[in-house]
Image (cartoon, rainbow, N blue to C red):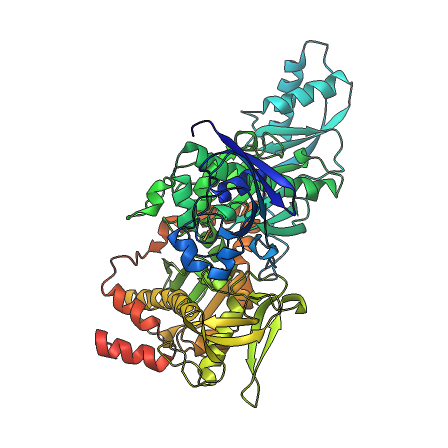
Amino acid sequence: MTGMRATVTFQPQRLLAEVSLDTSLLEAARQAGIPLESRCGAKGKCGMCRVVLQDGSLTEPTEPERKLLSAAELKNGFRLACEARVAGSGEVALYVPPISLVQEQKYELEGISRIKSALDPPLRTIRVELVRALPGEESTVLTQLERLLRDAHGISMKTSAPDALGKLREAIEQGRDSVSIVVRDGGLIDVRQSDAESPRGLAVDLGTSKVAMFLVDFDTGETEESLGFMNPQVPFGEDVISRIQYAGGGTAEASRLRELVIDGINDRLEEMLSARGLSPSGVAEMTVVGNTAMHHLFLGLPVKQLGTSPFEPASIDVIERDARDLGVKMLPAGTVYMPPVIAGFVGSDNLAAIIATRLHREEGPCMLVDLGTNTEVALGIDNRIVCCSCASGPAFEGGAVRHGMRASAGAIEKVEVEMDGSLTVSTVEDAEPLGICGSGILDAISALIDTGALDERGRLVSGNPRVVDDEGERAYRLEPSSVIKGGWITVTQGDIREIQKAKGAVRAGIEMILEHVSISYNDIKKVILAGAFGTYINPASALFTAMLPPIPIDRIVQVGNAAGVGARELLCSVKQRKEAEDLAKSIEHLELVGYPNAHLFFASSMMLSEESVNDYMRKWHGIT
Ligand code: FES
């Protein structure tokens, strides 16, 4: 079979890939540029990567396919792209159902309304008169310019970018009287013939699922444009661990993930700039914050060690690189500033969120909970900050849930209990219901407990007219939908377990931090919920399901994308960078793996009411 190849065609996109035999359909889709959902990281567990065989031969259905696809689906050619492999040379034709494609989701870009950042940027623009020199004496001009800058502006030009010197030479040769120079760290990084264009900066919040970008004008500190897009690495695994495992496969795999995200940023940046008539060299500085795995993949640092205890980062230092070295299409001599990460699962995004929320300056115990596929909890208390990372998993973002989806059009995002005990749902963009996103499912679970359809241990109650047997699993029929097999969007017993694990991980992290610093939740003055999910969840549902400890609801604030706000502040202010760098050295990281009785904290935190959490803790942990 070696050397035999096949052509795999994907419809309706009409894209194709030439692959060797035994290549998985998911790999073929990636080669063809089809963004298939792959929430479990191609492990045959999520069932999201469905395609339909129209022609050609594939390997026999595997065990996971028999488990996740019904007999009727198998008969009709449905296959899991991560499991099925090309079995014969020639043509393979596949149909890709829309639901199997990665969906665009709504993004929470803004955070605390501090959109205008404090201005103290690491670079500045100066208008200088050029002293005419004889041809061949450009170095004299540079020497004179150096003297001028030193005497008039206190700048010592120790190092200058060759490109900038080239532009300077060009300006001299053209007989220009003056130019605008862009200086960073005492070096010339750019020369502009006009000062009409102020240098721009780009702040990037590089999340596992989403990438948020903010274009900032360094003259005013204003954010000119912000946009969000799905991390192009998502088809290679929904969560950080899947990404780490894929990248750990070899240099080619790690490079592939790196290139995908750099290309994604470059494409979006080009769109932002061309809409303003700016060239890529208009962006002279960039800041990227992200969790440790995203940070390492972006920089090309090794990530394999992040997947195993003790989850050591390859670097916890501030890293600055020239844009040209990273392949970012901005001013080649511009700097990409990467703030330090704190631990293997507490990244620079958490540091940025702390800076943005001023957690370190808050009086009294104050907690920041940045919710996502990985949730970071940071507690500010008595001039110290203690943080931990909770493996909340993809359930909050619609992953690992039968009808789960991201918060895109058609996702049920809100469930309310009416006076008569019936439930009403709201969908993103008021579109026809297609599935349910994280905020919706947390609301749904809260509503099911409220109406008695679900008990506090997370069991759907038999006898409720909406609790049915759905393909061998107990499920609650939440909302009819014409596009869903079976005609209903359901909340299954398995979904409830996934949410219990996710919310339990967050609550357990909170409890362990509180125990570690010897305070009670009653002492907490404020809980700040950040991140997209943190913005959209209903705090009442978070309290009702015991995801958060029972603090008064008016102590909870939702701030949106705090990491994105922090990234902008770090982009625009040297002072903030220094503050963040100092803070990173003092933040205490609490490792939950191996924390005494961690399993009991997790088990009790999975209970779905405050009373049952406490009962469990009293019974098994002796805590009253
Ligand atoms: S089942 Fe194929 S990617 Fe999850």
